[in-house]
Image (cartoon, rainbow, N blue to C red; front, side, top):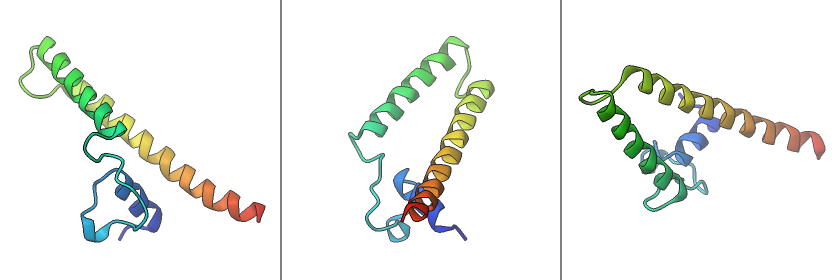
Length: 92
């Protein structure tokens, strides 16, 4: 079972179905949003790299790069959320 922090993160990144989303948290990947436009640019660049490398669908090293950057992003987001909750409570 996910904790609240993870549910907020997954609501924000659009990976939860509607019934599981945290109320009041946006989906940052809605159509025409800043994040969705960046994601689309990344996919286009990824396809160009794969084509230059002569691969059919994916390149293992590029997949490692993308997946590790996504993992770093999730780790940092969850830490920021935790520190936001913790430090806010410390200042009150």
